[in-house]
Length: 497
Image (cartoon, rainbow, N blue to C red; front, top):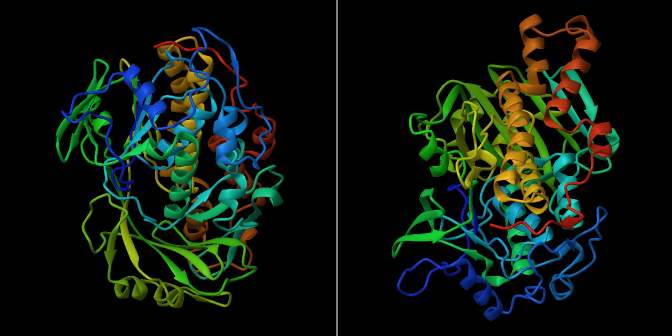
């Protein structure tokens, strides 16, 4: 049985926990019987051990509905099932956990359930960016058109100094030569869309709520629920339980709280007309103070204000602490550019949420026995480069690929960690150096009062090197991404517990 845990700061849905009325753990074999009773298609359960079962092709259609996918047990929905299949339980309904559930289902696994700490799932949060390498994975899951309808595909990313002078701009998504767009979406709406697809493909009872991971080991995950502690056996436990991961803390007991870098973020969404061409993501400022804005829908702008120093609601790493916008607006009172009035845009927000910019030091091991980490539990990073959600999606897809193609769970985990841990470690460290936003830091250091032309301050080759270097580190250099082999497995190896 495999478990996935997502961030405790996101909610979940009201479905029953996977225990009997006495609170006893449910054995893997019992879950297959339950799924049949729930009406979830199980027509391939009689496939024998070691059977090679074809699954979704590399180029996946997006037109099949959920009923067709379940009845055919193939195409985007995935193919293959065996009665002795590894049982998968995903505790948590965040972006990484839900994407893992869909990826594993596509790869041929059928005994999948999602557990979440919170008791209700709603459209929490603000805007996020899904970079082309993540949109590729969502497209191969058959979700490209559904996610694209949720937001805006930015065509340009532009950096400015705090005086509104241009530093660097570049095309994004399809305009930059990718085969997939970049998408700016509301995090909560995106999460609920993933949830809807999980229910369509895995069944209405696939997501269960009110389970907080306490510990895991020796093939057992222990959850705290309103009815008391629940123990569930598992062949594999994957902790994607966010920056405050219980599974990570279990193996890193001396790590302490997340590391604050001295910057505070304020995030919100504003009902306002677009700026510039209506499809540009802008970042203005430097290493001491910064403002970010980009459209996520018609007349809906995501805004992020940032300043070095303490915030107004404490230093707990929580995305959902509302604060009075007045002090934040005053910090940016002079930031009025010909193409954007920053204080006016901040004043138009429905609510401003405060968050200290935190991460954790990279660790040298994610996997312990039959447990491993995913997403923010594995590699919480600063939001420089807009990469957090995208990296969680890549984790989920990579994990599912190796579990579907390796001959044993431990070999799959070793391959997953070898692929993902070095890459994300490099990203965490790069983001501490501001990632691609380092161009704003350099411009301020070299010309704090402004400049006549940016090339008088930063040579064009240096600007290009910073932008290209980050794309390489993050895995979305256009040529490399377009030519990379798919993470959709073409056959299922018949992995055994």
